[in-house]
Length: 258
Length: 292
Picture 1 (cartoon, each protein chain N blue to C red):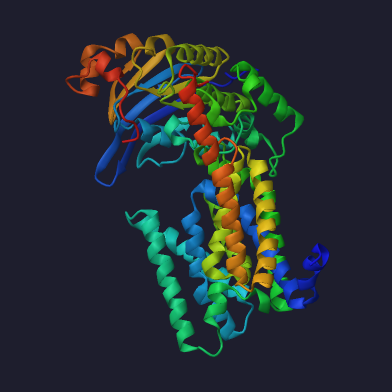
Picture 2 (cartoon, rainbow over the protein chains, first blue to last red):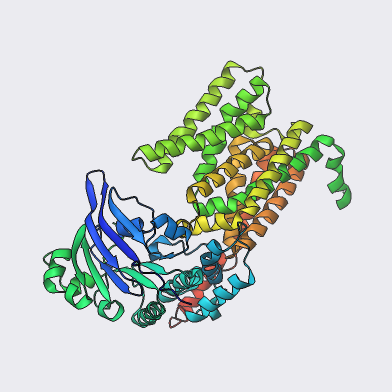
């Protein structure tokens, strides 16, 4: 399967500005992310990471600037099933009566007819995605009965089943132990190697160089971007996380959703 | 009394057969919808819509059109009004819901108090299932069937909406339209249910069966089936209890549902009180057990 046709970058954002009343969430944000890259989006809570994600998903309309995904508008990219989203753990109702396979099947809905009746192709895609993330044995478990890392992989499997070209992961390492984190990093690297683009918003600065090809440091505007090594300097982190913002204190889990 | 005679005796009366049909139809429709409502967190919305239809029902009787038309207009109108006020203030949605539905309910009371002879307030508030006419029976059956068909056709999209609205949006579904559809179905099922148990208790039929089934299973399809089974059993036993014990039909049906909920709450496998106690005791016995 060739995912890297065409020349347009996966994400191209130019002069993006979002304001909620008097509060500026994003100011003049411009960047591009090429296809088949893993990019880390780093910033404190309230730095505009969530707003940027919402812009990419078409949930928030920017007052200024332009945004395109694979050369299309965000609406066209969504209709084209190009974008998949892996939510933060705290945004999911883990008691919801769906199985792991049900969740992954939701990735196929855009490929199905209006009744969302799964075809043989859909079932095969779900089984393949579950196999790839190592959850095939657990496919009949209720989604909340998985461990933190398995939950993340279930949602990544949903994006794989969808055959999305751009995966947006919101704080994927929160509540995930080190072993599962390594598994998840390996999985995301595999997806990148087959030409998919991954944008990860994260606090986990320590794991960043292993995961990402690029990093963007955000605080309403872009403070730094480039390779993780170049972005994660003490000077940059101090600007993003405040004077006390060393690598260690910044990596500590902060209360999200603020 | 022998059991067959026990079951057949009430059915000799046409009004009781009609009551049974209306209650069953209303209960099944409401129980199916309740599975989505409780997962969406829309229980209060069900309460709001059911109270807000009062002026619609009153006006329909005064003007002389089928009650369901008036009820649906005001039910849907209440939903639209709540949405409009919510999106233009910084108030939380339960606040807006509370303001809008009590205001509409009061409008209904005011209308009825000015026209006491035409409308029986008690019948609207608490149902009048024993006095259901053939016309009303048909309204309930047709609207009930319509609601069920729409729900079952759109059920996978509605489940996705309830589970992960963002994903639904990201893969190109129209989440606003889906949300509006579910609210419209909610208004329809209130219309279907208010004839059976009245607008005060109809919300019980829209919450309790889904809540009971949720305690019993972790699969959505099984939850749907269980909710229908529970509510059907409760509706039938409620009607018979009301006949033999001479108590209000609406009250008997809702009490039967509440009884089913209590049983599930206490005795449900895994999540019931008894199971929780057992687990706690077992964990205390073997402290090294690891959560998988």
